[in-house]
Length: 602
Image 1 (tube, rainbow, N blue to C red):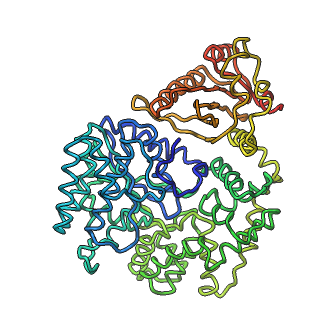
Image 2 (spheres, rainbow, N blue to C red):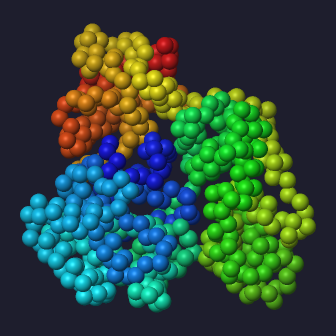
Image 3 (cartoon, one colour):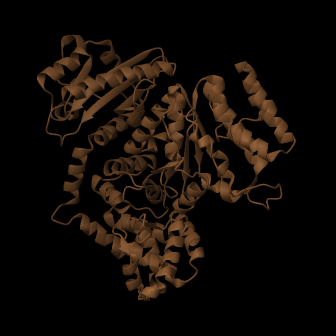
């Protein structure tokens, strides 16, 4: 896959997990050409993966080269005149549209093309209506007609859908910043606080639905209620945390990127401490204090990173804390945070919070006001009734709260290292050793086990050793098949876990493991379907049929990307083997079969 939009995550293979979110969003995108997709708002705190998801969606759609054209725009937390904002928005849209149509990459820093380049590329399209758009916008800009310029820029995806007969996905990252950092006047004195309302009608047009995001959930929710009435934006909440499999996959991938050797037990401890959170993972692996030689070293590394007042992790959370506490300017705001953070995995009624604060019932209205302010800042959560509240279910945030405020409020010292050691001990309760847990996890994460082995060959720039001997017995015609012979010498390039494929005719599909070759004359890849070792049953007829169907969609997608010569080795790996009829049918479809004994015996 070509990453024409530079992804902020860095190395694209660091995008881990998110199967549930990506499947839901890609299914939603697949309905855009049928005009069935309602605009959505991704809600999640900073560093929760919103930008990574949106930028990956852009690159997937760009590579698919289908009916849906992606547009991604990030609103920055920097003061800007609305006319300049309109210019940047429109140029970014045009740049990405032209990149899609002309199949050319964007600038390395994702900056929009200059007007000269845009005019040149638009002339090549030979579309008079698009050229008229450029002239009209430039007229508004030269006249400093800010209202017409911004409305014309925002409406561009809808108009271009009419001109081209295609559809657009409009992605605006951190849309809530429009209410704070865009100004009507050039001197930046009068805020355009209701600017997102300019999308009020556009957000309902099905030819260019919107996917927006916001990091301050209270702020975003308030903006959506005020400027997108009638639930014009459907909330799409995401957790900053990956599932257990995605978390362990990420630990190994980050360790690989940072060239750090980890035992399986240490990797499991890291994943447990950070609760499968990629942001915490980045902070841990890039820490100057890092020591991953032992459990004690991991704990001390994390203590140093959380306690470091100049560290990214600490400063990111303090932004949230400061925003909240500015609205609750007394020690009770901090005390409420500590109470709710301690009870972060259960809801507490206002009566319970009053009791913890040792307040009388007469102060309920005062408490509610403070709770609403803290919720707006994104540090606590409430139910729809605004009677029950809880802290954010994040153990690291709880540690930061207690490190920062426990002594100030309760005059009790907090020992962070002792707290983390206690959690590691809890991991081994009921006589379950770390080694036993790792073996159990690896049994449920066979894709990660295979990825690690194949990645070792990729690092060496070598082919897979003994490839022809890793399969179950097969017919003679497959033993000498050209695709198997060529793959014996294939040097491994990129490896994808959970590779998403989609076509306009089908819902989103997912390949468990895709191993690409490095050939310049042919697209080479090994495609794995994997059934894990904890599944006692053999693959069903439906499962083996679905895999072959996915391959047909994948081949079609590759041709749409421009690949003419395609060579695929198809492998169905079932840890517990196959039913005879299913395996015979797979062989008839040129699919090789393997189990854990055959694949790992080399």
